[in-house]
Length: 198
Image (cartoon, rainbow, N blue to C red; front, side, top):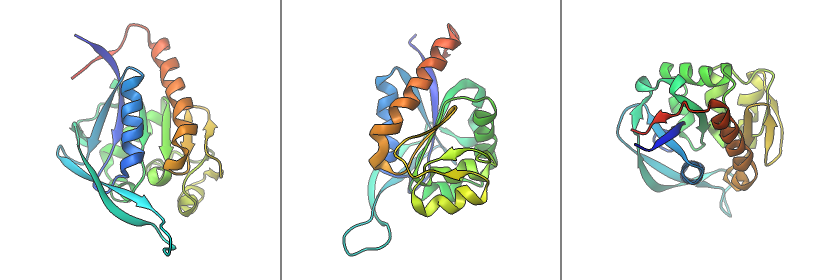
C-alpha cells in the first residue's frame, strides 16, 4: 500500500478555483495526499473571482466542481501534517462550523505547516488563532485579520513561523513553495509515521 502524509483542504460552495486546485496538485507532485473536506460529503461548486475592467468589486463566475472526501465532522486533525485555507466566498460561510474551528485550532496549536490565501484568513481569524501573527490576505480582509489581533502585511509571501500566507491567487508562485518546504521538513521529521492513503 502506498503511504502518504495527508494535508487538509477545507472547502465549501464558492471556494475559489485557482486557490484550491493549485495547491491541490502541487501537494500531489510533492508526494502528499490532499484530503478535501467540506461541511458534508458531496460535490461543491467552485468559483472564479476577479475584479474586471469596469467593476470596482470582485465579479464571480462558476468554476470547476470538486468533491469533498470527508465532512468536517470526520476530520481527525492529528492524522494530518498540514492545512491549506483557500479563498473565495466559502470561508465566510464555513467559518462557524465547530468541527472546522476545532481542527483549525489544532493545526495552529501543534505548529503544523499552515498556508492561507485571500479570504482563507477568515477561518483562522474566527478560530482566534491570528492574534499576534503576521499575515498577507486580500486587502478587503485586512479588517478581519486586524480586528482579531493579527498584523496585515501587503506582500506576496509572508512567513511567520509555521504560517505562510499570500494575498490572492496571483501570489501562488511566491508562497506555496515555502509552505511545501515546511511540509517536507515536517515529513522528514515524522520519519516512518505516515498515514495510509484512503
